Length: 437
Ligand SMILES: Nc1ncnc2c1ncn2[C@@H]1O[C@H](COP(=O)(O)OP(=O)(O)O)[C@@H](O)[C@H]1O
Ligand SMILES: [Mg+2]
Image 1 (cartoon, helix red, strand yellow):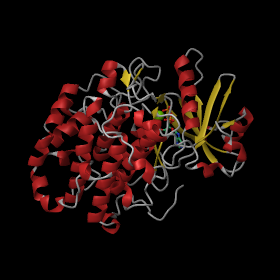
Image 2 (tube, protein in one colour; image 1 turned 30 degrees about the horizontal axis):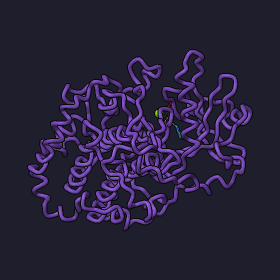
Image 3 (cartoon, rainbow, N blue to C red; image 1 turned 180 degrees about the vertical axis):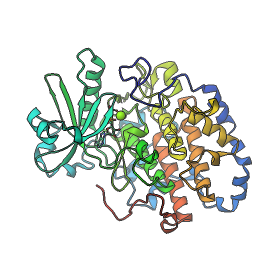
Image 4 (spheres, rainbow, N blue to C red; image 1 turned 90 degrees about the horizontal axis):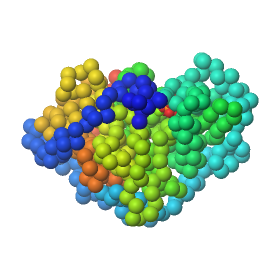
């Protein structure tokens, strides 16, 4: 995992004890979700409540019906009947959707259209990155440095150069893993693969350049204005669509295993793209196989407690991490905040406790307005979050179901408060007419 004894130790400033989640405590939180209904603000807002249809009563068709622009292209009517909620196997993922969803994107460079991506030469990479010019550094993770680059045809790319560590076989495995996963996938909300280079100790992956930083930086307000709640909901939905695609629709189902805010990249139009497939794992495809047993990997604070306990990995581990990400989006806090009071250090536990006590509003990011409409949306988001964070995987919703629920929350939020009234001079607003892809 990306903390503790891992060679990637230290990459995550919020890393902490992986035993931090006492599953019994979250279990207690789950069983007391009805306590949320005692919340006075909820009662006061009952008149508005009818605007929120019950997510459970929505059909998948309803959930994507009224926003064709945001309907994921892969959710065609024939796929919507596919079962996914509550299941823990990949039996329903046998439909092979293959690539081609967005395959037109490679048209301007025949070389990059090759299946499996281009094998770049070192000369091409050096030219693209001006010989790994330090001014072109755009990121640094546990596995190495990321540079901005430009290919000969003008395409902007991100060049991920693995640390050279001859003693580290993990790194080599992560590199192979990331390439193999990237080669299989293609989706609007996943970074697009361009190619790779493996030569004399150099391990380089080239993917599309996503220009607007990562989500953690935005939550830390490093890019100026804070993201408003509508935009945060959009980002959550983009991520949910990307992960649903990985779980259900790619050639071979994939478990990402490292869903977290620094792996969510944002476009200029604040659309989200999921990156970093170093820990991704192919899921079983046989209907009777429910999990893969594997060494635990992931980032402290986002790790599924059941996976930690049993070493059994399923797609529901991504759902758990997604629940942590939802809390991060609402609260702005990192999953582990070591400098806070003891009972606030594990952000998800703190937020779910507040929610079940009817005090969800106290967990709202100070950069968001504590308005009744925001509060209603946060309550709905936390209802879903509580399910995503359930201690056992069978109690968690599928990623697809999570996407549908979020979609209905966002639709109701926007219906109550049209875009104009959501605009705030202080916060980012997605430009609905701008095209970022
Ligand atoms: N395609 C990209 N476009 C723009 N920035 C990127 C891209 N890929 C990575 N980065 C930046 O580099 C950071 C580390 O990249 P990541 O792929 O997560 O590497 P690691 O495996 O080391 O965590 C990201 O958090 C992001 O800030
Ligand atoms: Mg990363």
